[in-house]
Amino acid sequence: MAAIRPLPDLLINQIAAGEVVERPAAALKELIENALDAGATQIDVDVAAGGTRRLRVADNGAGIEREDLPLTVARHATSKIATVLDLDAIATLGFRGEALASMAAVSRLAIASRAASQPHAWRIEVEGGSVGPVTPAALAAGTTVTLEDLFFNTPARRKFLRTEATEWAQCDEAFRRQALAHADVGFTLTHNGRALRRLQGGGRRARIDELLGEPFAVHATPVDASAGELELTGVAVRPAYAADGPGAQYVFVNGRFVRDRVLLHALREAYRDVLHHDRQPAYVLWLTLDPRRVDVNVHPQKTEIRFRDSGAVHQFVRHAVERALATTAAEQPAVSASERLGLAAARIPPRVAELAMEPAATTSAYGPGFYRRLFGERAGVAGVRDGDRAAPAIASADDDVHPLGFALAQLHGIYILAQNRSGLVLVDMHAAHERIVYERLKAQMGSSVPVQPLLVPVVFAADPLEVAAATDHADVLASLGFEVSPLGAATLAVRGVPAALDDADPATLARAVLHEMREFGGSDVLDSRRDELLATMACHAAVRAHRSLGITEMNALLREMEATERAGQCNHGRPTWYQLSLADLDRLFMRGR
Image (cartoon, rainbow, N blue to C red):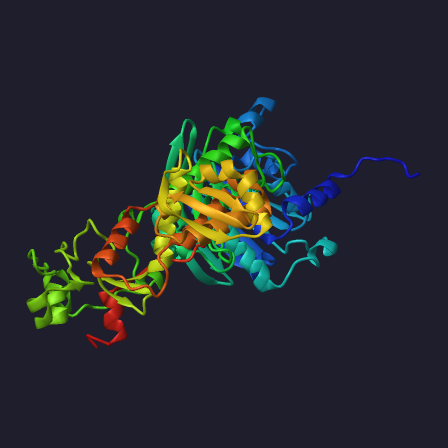
């Protein structure tokens, strides 16, 4: 057996480099964090060959004293913690004191710095772990760290690096994370001599627009919640506009980007009831809490953390995002097609804008002036008909109280066309009504579900398993608002249905519920599969496609959508309505060109 011996410091640092600086992007992250900890308000990043040839980070922070420069590249030397008690409340991004030493062991490293209190700057160079002397340098303020030829002396590590394009993409993402986390700091980014980003310290909304694009911000709803020492702010993209593939998912805890399982699960749960199965949520969120309540010293790269009370954090984050996504249509800004694409609004011809903003006259016998213009003299003689009844007068279509506007017509028995202040609203009537019924059922499940007794029981043929399910789970059926009883070995009678579903076919509805109970059992239906069951019931009770609706019915549906949480998407996560602005319509018809 070989003798046990201590490892030399250089080998220790090279081993540590594999954990802390596995690729150029990891080194860039550490260098930017050091600049932020130094109080920098401007950080300039220069990358060459994806970071394999050069990484340079210059900041205007507090700087480093001359006598401290050799300690910056010494193992586990830091100014950020002094005792074990400091580990319980880490408030800085870097604290382990190993990053620069690890980089210096596997690259050519140079650090130039001028402390704020000193008249001159000083410089130290390290090549493959060999530390040179401290020499004078020319630098106005702050610190500049230059890292060249990463892993030049550790070919086994270097061969695991990817192509320049891949390493650059990783560096760009590391830069993006830090720039999002610290929106009050100015950043610049250059790659191979080409200036790519110049970010001003203008706040979080401006930073999101700059880094993720205006369409992301347009589709996002604000998140702002606090409970005791917990605070969550940021934006979450509304489910109907979530990405088909992996979306932008950024969570920062006390200014640190993390990939924490507790938080990721909480966010998936927040979207669970509103997101289509092939979509991914997107969000940028900042969580703030007492540093003593989170352990960031779990992993050398510090992207994994551990909460002291993970259950409380999970519940807080989940409910905060759920509430934000539950905003009604009346609380959401209308998003036009041009805004979805991030396009500038086209110029609206003056007469079109004038007609759009013109108040619609109403009388007790006729609909608004818009309907009279649409239907001509027919509206003037007989009024706008709703089935066999004249439609009642409605408010102006540019009334801000009703962001979904007022119905114009029905298209192929599937879509409702409505006019609002912005232009045209298209509504999938079945999907919209399905969400309304679903939310109503969920609200009623917290108490006794109102039952609508049937004047004449609905009798239908049932197989023995359905009869057995109705008998064995009568209490579960009752809690859902159903009165179902057997009339024989192969017959069931529905004597009552949930009041919210009184328009649905009782037999079809009862069969759907009994099927769920046969598959999963009564207790599981009310517990883990409650929402799936309610969604099934809502689907059967919702107004069916190809059913003709009158103007009054369509307007009633629009008003219910405006008052219903999560009405922007159906139970399967698909959008229920879509806005076409006048600018979008003008563009389609090339008006104003």
